[in-house]
Image 1 (cartoon, rainbow, N blue to C red):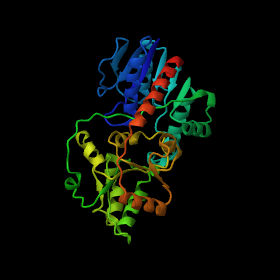
Image 2 (cartoon, one colour):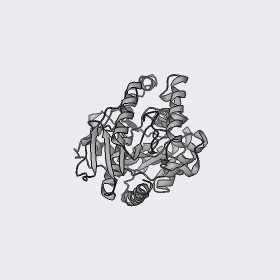
Image 3 (cartoon, rainbow, N blue to C red):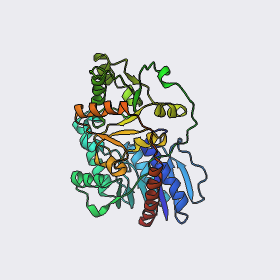
Image 4 (cartoon, rainbow, N blue to C red):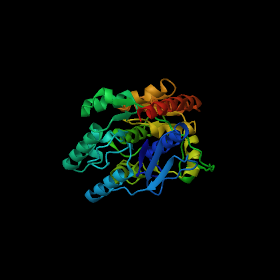
Length: 357
């Protein structure tokens, strides 16, 4: 069987790109019977692929002309099955394919990325078509399955829960003084969430201000690493207007060689999302054994149970009290168990995925 893997939008930093790379790596280990064609851009790098894997460079475009060219390319390659990770497949492609939907936040928090009702409606329609026409839809948890069923009325027997990995990193590490580099006088929390409504970042910033201005005489800083959050004018204006420049630090994307210092020298990593399809962004905190403070959503609880600390992300007072308590009792975590459990489930699901081919 000839199987195409859609890796046209591979990038250097995204969770989706990491997931696709991990999936290809595991298929390379587990499946020697099927033949794979990886359509990708120039950023995709793969070593030690078996002879049944072929890489073709293809640009990513969604114009009408490219739709036709891409459809003809797929037709010419006579593919038996396609794995799509986004709705921007050729609109009229009607051969067998499996869907791995990504970024469902746009279905539930649409105004972060859409400027108009038209763009929102277009996205919803294309997502509906993408999932309706798929042979099977692979999701990352039961919550995601229920959300798609409720929002898009997908049949439950079409949706398969598929456990993704929390990623391992093997970056060469430089020991740097993060406080000196950013003129930080206090201990600091770290977060690297993008600027979006469901990420609750503004509430976290307000709570940091309340802690620093409370009678507790505790002072704490917050490092925010992520290009979109750091370049968001509204967010930076909010920090300046409230005179928070001395305790809120924007550091853009952290250099991979310096990541370990940022994580290990923070006292806690804050995960504040109120909705997420899967907490991929916790991978680095886990990799560097930084203790996690997470919002109490079911997706995170069903992975970590009582092994990390939680807070009510909709209550400023509870969040403030939890953060104050953790400032006084910093911890060092050990997440070896998550890799053992997580990767075992992922391997089992790869075998199950191959059976669906």
